[in-house]
Image (tube, rainbow, N blue to C red; front, side, top):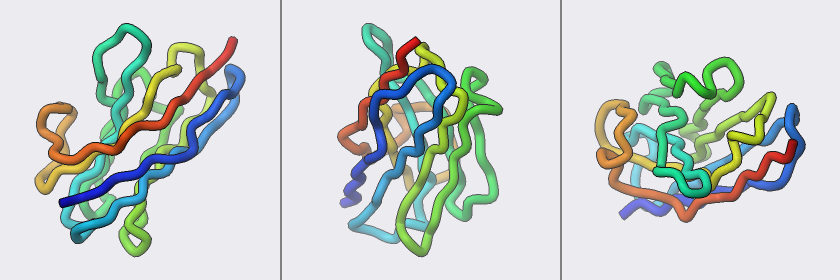
Length: 123
């Protein structure tokens, strides 16, 4: 069983930055692909970014490409999401997720989820 705990959310103004972190425990972290998803008010959960087990390959949603960066530290069992140039439309609960297979953008393919952290961007 894998446990995921997100942190780093908050309230910022448009154009500012936030760095989200997700701490994993319960299994060998480097065996898992990690992903970030978000769910805005009244919206379905959507893909944000994913990173391969070794950290070599990353993939982003078009809406965040060039502004967000996903990274991982397998020695510390953590994955991060650096979010720059934030926009009001980035307001959502952000979730990290893991799966013991290759990267995918599909939320239903991830086995473990954190509880989420709120990001609010004011205009």
